[in-house]
Length: 139
Image 1: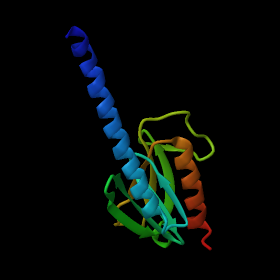
Image 2 (image 1 turned 45 degrees about the vertical axis):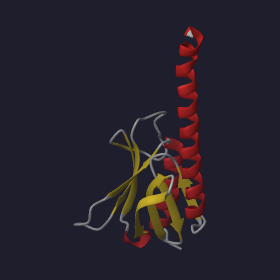
Image 3 (image 1 turned 180 degrees about the horizontal axis):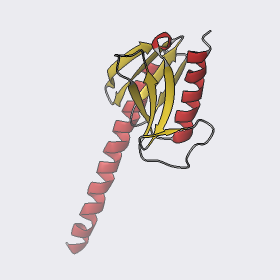
């Protein structure tokens, strides 16, 4: 009986991990379907991001699909910046790590900036450089 009680937490942990894995797989499959409409797309646990021509769309991944989807045109963007731990970062001088990584899109005065979260600094920098070039040199 003692052995059974010792194995019970391990069994519960196994089922919990299997359930979490299944949920993550569902998120990725829902993202894959959502991303098919874009020329370029990214997935991470914080946000999904897609670019089609000069339109940017992003939202939050869930097992049932992307929610809270928002969009804007790169034509409306005045500038793109990378922030790591709420500090502006130079594209060519990236920090090795950070907890809060965001791409910020600035619009005309009076319109709030948009910050899209990322999990990795190199991925955020790659997207930021690409979109910065699209904003400054359209076409």
